[in-house]
Image 1: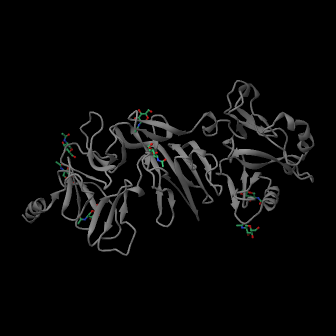
Image 2: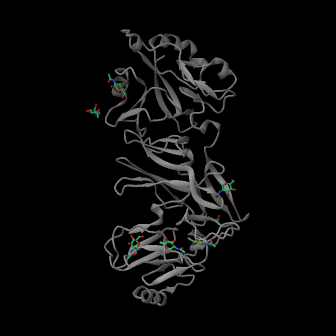
Image 3: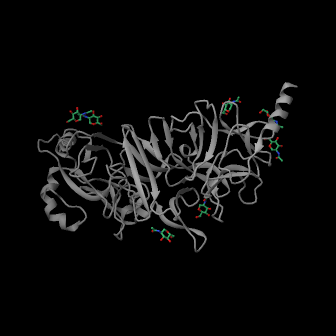
Length: 446
Ligand SMILES: *[C@@H]1O[C@H](CO)[C@@H](O)[C@H](O)[C@H]1NC(C)=O
Ligand SMILES: *[C@@H]1O[C@H](CO)[C@@H](O)[C@H](O)[C@H]1NC(C)=O
Ligand SMILES: *[C@@H]1O[C@H](CO)[C@@H](O)[C@H](O)[C@H]1NC(C)=O
Ligand SMILES: *[C@@H]1O[C@H](CO)[C@@H](O)[C@H](O)[C@H]1NC(C)=O
Ligand SMILES: *[C@@H]1O[C@H](CO)[C@@H](O)[C@H](O)[C@H]1NC(C)=O
Ligand SMILES: *[C@@H]1O[C@H](CO)[C@@H](O)[C@H](O)[C@H]1NC(C)=O
Ligand SMILES: *[C@@H]1O[C@H](CO)[C@@H](O)[C@H](O)[C@H]1NC(C)=O
């Protein structure tokens, strides 16, 4: 009986807001069929369906773009099967999505109870929960930007926030009409040494590796850099790496979307004239961007007819397969390293220029070492196969060394970095003879 009364009371107290409001407070709600709209009229938040399905989702989309463009979904894997869904702020200050049965389908997760909670859709497309009583705090109690779906909007931060323990990653929709994630995601990963590398994964397999942080950007992802359309910024602090972008011209609409169907991370630009999205940039960009396409110790050079080449000092593991352009087995050393033979003569290094740094999974770094200290560190450990500066700003600083096989190296025009690869001393004498045969690799010691 008490429950029944409370139910009647709550029904009469909840006013459904009408379109054009951009927020709801306590005792207000959004029922299926009503929405809230950001102040500038760009984004809309409410219930929607996809295709012919009767399933109802709650999310955010571009209001003025006629092609349905959903940028965030709350109940991604738990659609509501009728029109009885109701969004409301519960008594402990969370936004909850209720089904007819009063069962909670989805909710925000504020750690703090607001005295006067308000949920607002900002002009950025960020849905925020804040406390109107607490004017001192700029921070939101919860925001949709912290829980991205498949879309990175301008102004959104992507990557690790170690302070709040948040890993903000993109996960693609299963299909165009199913926002539930399957197994395709893009995230900044913390390696064993807490070093971030940004990767697209299909399940546990690496599909594309944007590359490690190098002080300026991510070495293998030139498309994420600032260009004439947008400013991008990175924050690298401790073991947090964040990425974000802002549009230079607010009347231009660009979004970054991860798509399971075409297996791409795409920058989409809204074309007002065509009334359609056009692809502005895609990752992986080309054959060489496919993770590990040339196998171990290979280098992918897109301009060559045979795109895969063994690194200097290496030869194809299987010449027959390699000549048939099956690169999967990669390359092995032509001659053993001097340190393996216990020789007194030190190994040496050849410089490979203009490349995307190899996978950092089997690597180690020290930010206070210089390049010469780095060389010695590598030389003194026979498992070390290569070294480089970690931060390429200015003269370069910091040290990274790699162990085992070098994976996923490619030639990159313009933005590449330098890597020093260990070779036995014998080859050093011969390198002069061969250096002209391989214009892409310059030997600093010759
Ligand atoms: C909708 O889902 C509820 C449970 O969430 C179920 O009881 C009901 O039968 C479903 N209705 C339809 C029409 O499928
Ligand atoms: C409000 O919603 C949150 C999140 O689902 C939940 O933890 C909390 O118990 C709810 N409060 C009440 C009074 O139901
Ligand atoms: C109502 O909610 C309860 C608990 O959330 C659930 O076990 C039950 O299946 C629901 N019934 C219907 C008809 O949806
Ligand atoms: C993914 O891309 C395909 C083909 O380009 C497109 O048809 C589909 O709508 C996209 N999926 C999503 C979820 O946007
Ligand atoms: C911004 O974009 C609009 C539409 O493309 C264009 O008309 C306008 O000139 C641009 N403004 C600037 C400052 O580039
Ligand atoms: C990093 O290098 C500096 C300078 O050579 C050294 O003092 C420090 O001990 C090194 N740190 C580690 C963890 O090896
Ligand atoms: C060489 O590096 C490997 C991998 O980090 C490490 O396990 C090994 O102890 C090192 N050896 C020496 C002699 O430092």
